[in-house]
Image (cartoon, rainbow, N blue to C red):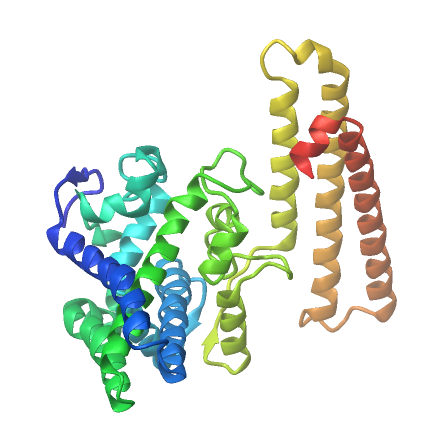
Amino acid sequence: MKGPLTESRPQMKWVNIIFFAFTMLVTLIGVPLYILKVGMPPPVILALTIFYAVATGMSITVGYHRLFAHSTFKANPVIEFILLFFGAAAFEQTALRWASQHRDHHRYVDTDQDPYSIKKGFFYAHIGWLIFWVHPLRLENSLDLQKNKLLMHQHKYYLLWCIGSGVLLPTLLGALCGHALAAFIFAVCARLVFVHHSTFCINSVCHMFGKATYDIYATARDHWFVAFLTNGEGYHNFHHRFPGDYRNGVRWYQWDPSKWMISFLASIRLVSDLKKVSPFRILEAKLRADQQRVRDWLTQGNEASRWERLCTDVEAHYKILHERLHDWEAKSREYRRLVYGRIQEHSQAIKTCTQQEEAVSRGKFQLALGNWQLLIKSNARLASLVF
């Protein structure tokens, strides 16, 4: 195994080049040609294509990414097999290689050790790293995964897995319906192009465009449209700030089918030990990012003296807001400990009193938050930065 500081090196990867070129050409030429000569594919082929796009895409996001790369939950062996089976059909390397390189991405983000660093350009981060560069495979960062026999079987016999699940099976299903060619064009090639470039957008688009909601200094950004394309993976600023959370779209209104699938599987006890960050830590990160964004603008260049009073007010309001948030968190934790803990000697009066204290702390925080927002809204430029 290569050491942790082994450098990536430029090298034409002809297998990948030919594969990506072939699937793209079949999609760009074969799809319109088929429609012109034969007509629209029958509903069964369209359904097969959609099923495979969803199954392979979700296997990458739920399986390769959130289960194997970040260990944000534990899965039943049957679920692991399904995720590895359709993950192989996505033709995005073995789960072991994918997870290992993704862990390097988080550990060495935006450096030369990052396999798909956006600092090397949009094209490199999108697809260039897969066709023009060779990257070290540092499997010492995935010793936990190497204990998984099913995952290692997929790694050892990957060609059998990916060709069987991603090419032969959908083509055979199409042949059983009398439409083998349509299945190959739509459910194999066109589906692969869509899933590949949707996934690649996370490394390129989400590291260049969007909003830095939780960490303004990270290149990772939250991008709602990429989230739509990738089953919730587009909330990338949140993910880089909290990579151990099984969710990416943490708000109830954010599109994250991967999160919903994991939650559903947990409800029927096929997965367990779902890891998620405290809402207080998330709120703290959001407020901290807003404060840093405001402070950086107020103190930039030679304009700092113009905003000295406002800058002082911002720091003072944020300090109060931060203290109120931590006080609310402490009271909330104590209340939950009394209500849900195993200690039975606490009287109802104590629990009620603690609940009231938690409510008071929450009210004080909300008041401080309102004052903070009023201060920001008093300056149109600051309001545009935060809201």
